[in-house]
Amino acid sequence: MRSIFPIRGLTRAAALAIVLALMAACHRNANVMPTAVQAANIPASFDVTLLADKDGQFDFDGAPLTPEDLRGAFRYRLEEHLPLSTVLLKRGEKQKIKKEHIATLARIALEMKFKAFMLEHDGAISELVATGKNADAAASD
Image 1 (tube, helix red, strand yellow):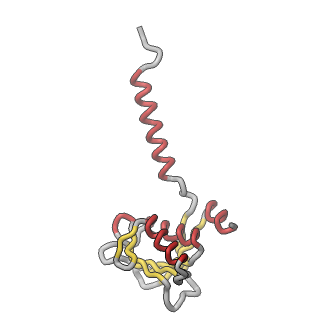
Image 2: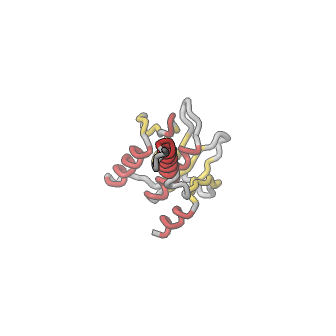
Image 3: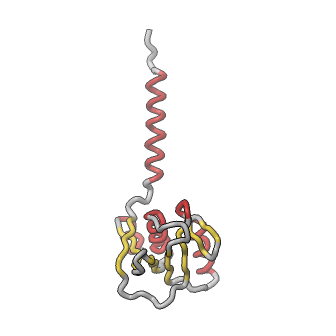
């Protein structure tokens, strides 16, 4: 006699549901895509200089910060009325700038309304601009 609810089928369905939930969580802000644009008006100096660090972190004044901690540090600068209109991202001592660094900084710059720049390996400085459906909605706010 067969059971109405086969155990094997339920296990597969649960595993599939978990995988789909994880994939959906990872792609929550996938519509905000950063692009590097050759900056026409590069400032002479930058208010904040960041270094790319391992695991998608940033080195800010010698302290490794996660993206959430970096947002907090930038909010603190704004609350204390410290300058935060231009941010430069450089390559770290042992870490190259990855797409994760670029996407994170472009998203934070869009949210907090400052300009983000990146020093490329050839010495050129490019402005990071977030593009996509979510970026257009945030820019109109």
